[in-house]
Length: 252
Length: 220
Image 1 (cartoon, rainbow over the protein chains, first blue to last red):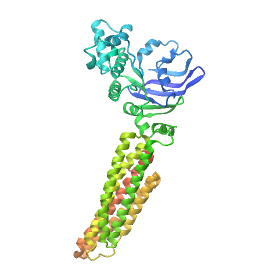
Image 2: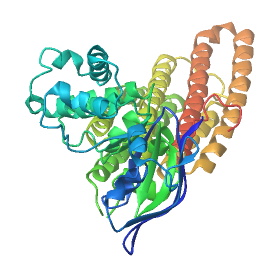
Image 3: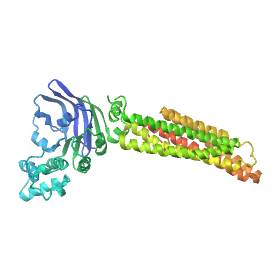
Image 4: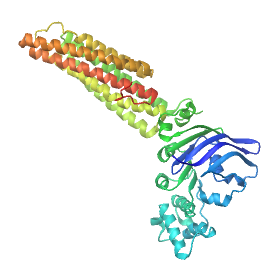
């Protein structure tokens, strides 16, 4: 299996506080990798190192290498905007722009000048909404406010927005934690569908969700990678005692 | 977390399985006793108590499903519930074989006794011992012991062949014994099947401990 992302010996610091310790991990192309672990274990921090979202924190510092398609994303000449286009992100809380449904999707396509004419723009917006399994629900109200959508729809709108700029990797930080079971199921089905085209990394507190959607699971604790294994192995017979204790709720 | 909610339920599941195991051992022991001591009343008790065993199987099934649905166990917890859910019907089937032995006893106890039932009691003793050890190995999650028990099944298979041949000879020598000897052949076959079932339990013990399915595998 080809690696889309190769992380080696990654350390990450918030000021003097070391949040990630010597992480080495390969993320295969067109697979879903789930990060699990207790709150504060560094899984979200790690996720954000993969498109340099942590750059926005002044005291944050990373060392080690993160290669995407063989290119070091922490190299000085990296175009961070291009990187974030290639590595899109969906957050825990849906954050649509205070604009229409159409404009939410069109925004990224416009600022990146990724369209030829109005018809092309409309076609691209439509495709992103289709790919995010939202089209049928919004096709008759594209010009209404995105805030009129339900929580689950807003989250899929954010996924559509990420897809619109044609990323290759999608990072999802607890994408379904604020959603009801039906909306959660839709997001999970979408994740499984999207992995045909994209490499997906998802942070989740919901272990069943990790088990349902991911091909591989990484378990973090206190900023360290405890175990990284095929999800099936992880949930039936993990190699590490610590993983077993965590996934069976024996932690205290 | 010192005590998880699931622990209580897993303990209950283990208790119920061991209780079922105990009842099954008792059924087998009594069935053989009813045959060797020509005690048809005891045989009828075995038939009667099989209904309790069937109920116990259903209870364990219900509890297993409940734990899977509500506690969503993973890793060792999951393997434990799966093992119990798979061992339970095996025990119930062993008890069914005991019932069939008791049934055979009722049929032949009123007939004149064939020569001292040859190797049957020893064969049943072996099977009962294997069953008891297999349940111990389940409790202690002892994969090595389970593998040892699996090997012992060969002894039962060999006894079965011996008993089979002897009974055929008896039938040929004295055709008037055919009806009783045929019943004893069935008894021998039931015991031989019990040996196979104990083997299946041991394979699940290995799964519980090592997460490896060794059934149908040439290497144990």
